[in-house]
Length: 410
Image 1: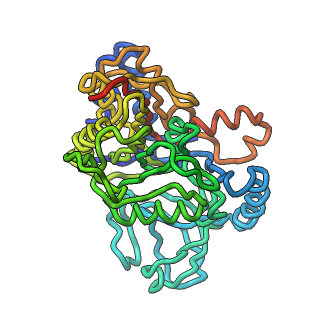
Image 2: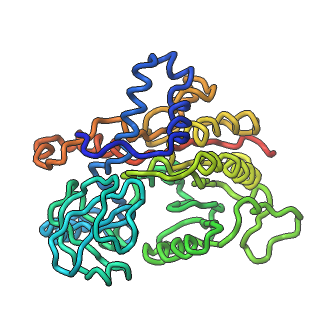
Image 3: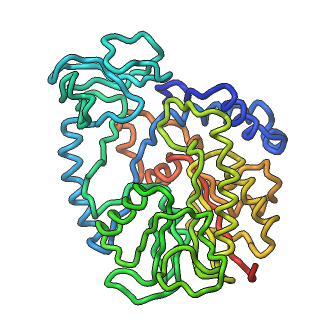
C-alpha cells in the first residue's frame, strides 16, 4: 500500500533513470505502457521502507535459536513502546523535552535549523515524544521516541551487537563463500593461511576512507573474525608494479595474488530505501561508472587463474550494473560469467546487449518486484512461513550481483 509520494529527484536524474528502464530492449519486450508503469512503481517503492528487516546471525559465537530468543526479548522492549529513532531527512519543530509532536520528512531540504514553523514540501512520518529540548536536539542523541509511526519497523541500532549483522545484501558475500574464506565486507580474499579458531584463510579489506576501515576492524573484532586485515588504501592503486616480494603483507599486491575477490563497488546508491528525496546532480549519479571500471581492472589483475570475482552494487542503474558486465566480458576475454547460488534475486535487466542466458546468471534485486505491503501487521499473521521468507527476500533494497571466473592469466 502506497503511503508516501514517489522519490523526489532532479528532473535530469529522473529522465536519465527513465531512459535506462525504458530502453529499446525493455520496451520491445514489455511494451511502452508496461515499461513506464514498472518505472513509476519503482520510484514509489524507493520512498517506502522494506516491510521486513533481515539480520544475519554470527554462528561463530552462538546458535540461531539462541539469538532468536534474545531478539524476541529485545523486540518486546522496543516494540512495546513503539520506539523508532529519527535519522537523516527528518525534521520536527518543538520547544522542550516531553512535548508530543508530529514528525515529517523535509522533501526539498528547505527547513532551516532552528525554524519555529515550516510551510514547505513535507511528508508525515508519525507522532512521538521529544526526548531532548530544542537546544539539545542539535547536539545529537535520541531526539524523538516515536509512539505512532506510520511504519512499525523498530530501530536495530546497537541491538545485540556481536550476534547480529544487519544487511540483506549479505548475499553478495555468500555467493563468494568457499571452505577457505568467509567474507563479510568489501574484500580481497587470499588463499588458505593458518586456521584461526573460527575462520580459515585470510581476508584483506581495502577502502580509501579511514572511517570505513575502522568500522571494518571494529566489526571484525566484535564478530570474533580473526582472519580479517583491513587497510586504508586506494583500490585503484592496489596492483604492485614491480616484482619485488612484498615483505609487509599489505597493499599494493603482486598480480594474481588472490583466490577470491569481492568488489563491492562504490556506486550511486540509488537502490537504498526508504529515500524520500535525492538531490544529486546527473553528473554525480553518472560519475561512478569510470571509477568502477578502474577498480574492476585492478581486481582482474589481482585475481589468480581459476579464481572467482564477484561484482556488486547497491544501485539500480543500468550503467553501473548490466552495462558493466557487458563491458567486462568484452574487455577481459579471460572472464566467464557464472551462475550464482543461492539464486534469490531476479534476472538482469535488458538493455546492455547481454544474451538471455547471461541475464539469467545475474541477480538484480528490484524493490518494485512485489507490491507495497499493508502497514497493518495483522494482515501477515496468517501467512505461511515459506511465503513470508519469499516476501522478505523480494521486498528489499535495490542491489545487483554478478559472478565471474578467471579462466587464464591476463
